[in-house]
Image 1: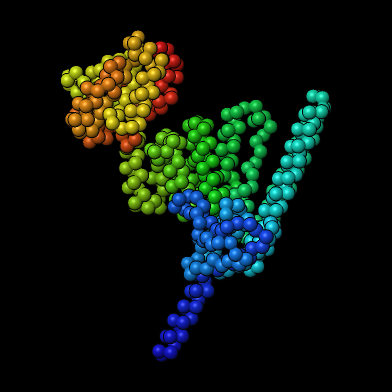
Image 2: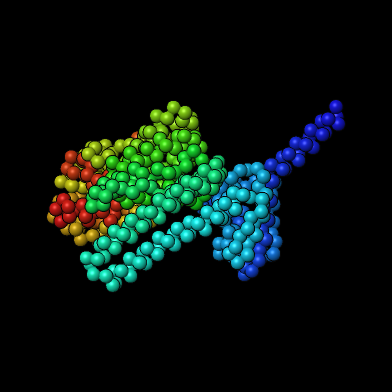
Length: 466
């Protein structure tokens, strides 16, 4: 019985090592460098990080009992990319890459042999498209306008044939490599469909079509794609476009993407987390609060939502889902720099810039300094068309007194202190990031929530206050 138990343990030990161990050999010829690195994508830092480094040698071996996380990896000679390989499974991570002046041969990894062939073929397709571009540039310099249009139509037809040939080839390679990282990377790289011809003269329709079809070929079923720069950059570019276009109707594209991502729960949560970090974080320069609110409401309706996420999303929503454009801001008590106690509602003005701040906050100081030099703002204040009310909302009498008796307290502004801390205690505003400004009308109705400093002059001119 003891012999049998020992045999089982030995068998399990060797089975574990056979499956878990990573062993990647690099045979390097005719490469000039001081060091060789293997870099993989980190899901924590969201960038490529070094997993192995060694001085250059004819043969190097990366060996570990811990398997590499499936994804895309780079081999760098100093800082120059000399190879890229794929890991599709956490088992049997053993192969050899022979690198010799641009020629790469893999032993023990059919997937990477196919990947290398695919990369070369994609470069050939790109070269053919670039040749068409060169032909067009040459024609522009030599052809009369009436001939150029016919020639351009011919080039367009040729470009479409190359694109169709390219996609057919991509889908063929995908079918030949089912279940692999290669198949998913190819799927993520297939271009979205072209919009109808009549959309090209309508910017709004073009934007919406592009965003609606942005993820048409994205492999939501495979969470490994998010372990690559390809998946990361795809999401970043999507968020960047949502921010640039700044259209509420495009929020439906975010919800559609979340719907598609639900095919795999790991992908679903991972995708939400990455979009939240860009469009939802109050420290992100690309924050889109209205989009984020819709994302949170969508997630809270997800039947299988994790309890910890549900609690966090409910709290987040309670902080930001208020004080929207068209809403009346809440009232609060303040003591003014004159010593008089009043309320926010008792301060009358045709228009007002409410400036929630901490007097010693570096960003608050910087913004106040910039505002002091805004001609339209100063003119609107001088004409009595607008008031600026700065409000300190924390509990430090010394900070308040030092501020109102310093040159930093602009004499053209009104300065108040929410001395009873109701702004913070009752969560009247989202004050996690300051300064936080509202442009409001005489009824304390929000015209612009969280107005940016570089928007102030434009809004004042649009309202004719200067």
